[in-house]
Image (tube, rainbow, N blue to C red; front, side):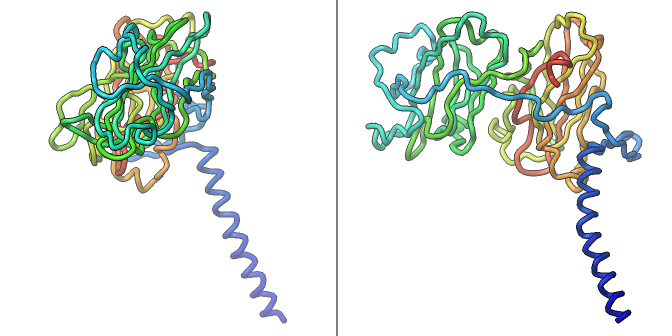
Length: 357
């Protein structure tokens, strides 16, 4: 009997370890934060545990988007191409109506491949502009660029002659400051379809407002960008947030740098600010006016073996308001270990610390 009892005790111990070890690991990961590699310049790797209460902490799930306008339904539509169709004052009263979301080939435009435009008005009430906004268009077959009140806010894929389809990419476009206005706003969407289907095809279509107060500085939109591999690319403009593969850097894995300048910020007595960069694939290191304000992971291939989920973390880095000047520069170094890369999703801007929590 004694050997049997010993055997049962041993089995019970093994079962207990199988249950407890993953739980301990999960608690350690979630409560203690993320590894940060320091002193990389001199070749040393020191592991620092980044506690949620420490400076430059990450805030997660702090933003909720509320739909303020359902844009599904009837839009004005025309095949062809004319840059004047982005103009909010263009008269489109003789255009046909088309249902969104749905492919244009199922609505009377059989076998049409090429360029077309959609237009739709949105009316915003007085006093409604004290938030950040986002336009969702679902899935577009194949390529698109979007204008609000004549200002380009973003696009996916590549138009001919450098055609690149983005039919399977969700369109979520942050709207920069001073684009929307009280009263009438005109949304214009230019679409190119290479084959089959075509158009604003399916998914959620609407205008969203952030639950957070409006950013002190909205940093979404155009940034300067270049890769930093063995043969660095030229400096080009890219849209943020959006993966770099959709902006001319298909299949690029490695190091890149984003750069954006902005002017003075009215901090209104706030001592601590938060830089929100949304989600980044994979790891990043961020400087404002040459000062390090935060990092997630390290800028090395080995990070992929440490934590494969860095790309899921929403970046929110605290920094002192005194760091800002009349002219400011943000630099974000990003390392992508494989697959898609870059600043790809979420709110991008500077907030008062109490607004970002």
